[in-house]
Length: 469
Image (cartoon, rainbow, N blue to C red; front, side, top):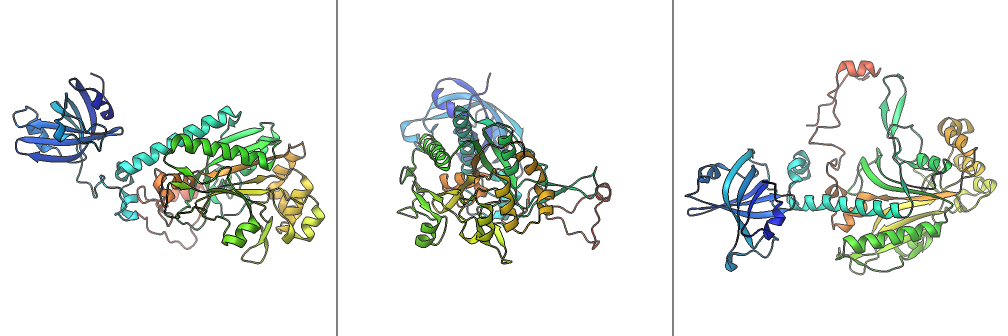
């Protein structure tokens, strides 16, 4: 007999079915023993009577045990039907039950939404936390959104291309995660903060329309909408203007929300386009929450922010890029860029949603002299530029089409659409707020002396921090 998904048992009244799942709850009423059994598709009530051959086995079963059940689907009396669930009109009378896996008493209930628990408890037992309905729905919707956006971009002529994870450390904003090379002692790979340079090199390669759901890594201070590793929906296009990118993004987002989140209401279309100067003057932030009711999670207030400054002063009172150094300045005169950096605007744009920056992008510099001027403003010597970005300038010397792109903080987008307050709720195995992974126990100092010797790494103070698990 083939397996029947629990959600389909409501259509099987009078038939014998085989289901697999977790024991959700157990109730005893006299000579009747009731189980609620769940699989990924739903939950159903199962009943066994004291005169049933399976009763003795059933009495030993505990919550979260995994079982195989064969039984007859029967309609429940009208007074006993549960309209709250899809299978509430039926129950399964057990004919045979097999325990596939016993379970220890779980440290917390997986029947609640989990918000009552500490982050440490949930992250330590994340594999249990994922069993709860809210987390299952979040991850399934993550899948649905990825599937929808991927198909949308396929139809628009984009090519999905994966770029390397082991790459080169370059100054692009946040600190890099470094990976030591065993073969080349003293040399390091870096994990990509974004696929920025690779996607521009794809444009040099004549790809024209690229995208990927890219893993990105940034060693920066953490908060609710940041993680050490996260996913971007990354896009780059050749021969494109700013307005065309914004129109593409707007159409894609509206269609996705309308199709997958019908309960959500987009406040205004087309999305408002507000300059950086205007938004800072009126709201004092470049990520304003434009909802009429700030507590209404079903209201989606999108807006594009444009006209950013190209440069800003950092904590050391030196010029840094507002977006990144590859952004095309509105002013294309290298002399003027170096002379008056504070006056230079960038062809940069952000998409904000309910007070969150969910996407950011720009047109890119494709002229060598403009790029060099930008790097000089940022304090890089010509030697430094050649060492860190010589590969890019070399590629550009063979001809590069004008191009631009945008990248979505994918978890931030999902967080808002799912009404969550933290991106960890839409990730399967996130880090804690302080960057730890309690389930596996990382970062860990538990590496062997042999590993360190192979990598030619020495811990100078001779001390190892305790493992975190």
